[in-house]
Image (cartoon, rainbow, N blue to C red; front, side, top):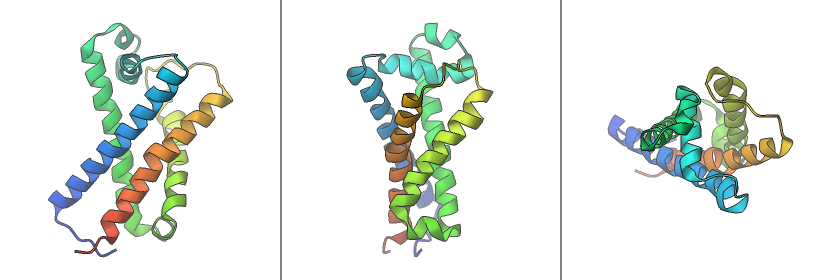
Length: 160
């Protein structure tokens, strides 16, 4: 762990990682539930995210709710990025097993979102479906956990 960047460099890395992982996650969800399963579109996905704060009224909202959904989506991605970035130098497992720890972090992200965060929001809960759990976990493993892990590892191990 050679990197001891100034705060601006740290913030830039966290923001860049947030944008990459958050975008990969959002696009992957849209691809699965949009063109592949033909169940929704990007606007409805983002209104659903905004629904966490605004409840059912978000679904009937316009572009304002889409913007709120984008904001909340990237805020959550930033929280996951920041947490991993701060834990990385303190937990040897994260440094020694970069790919595995990233995949496991995706599972942690799924559990945290579905067991802790979503029950505290206004998002209506549908019936439990194992297919949804598997898809959700896989998406977070490969498009949140893994990119955050790889980019954080690259940040801390790059040569100055």
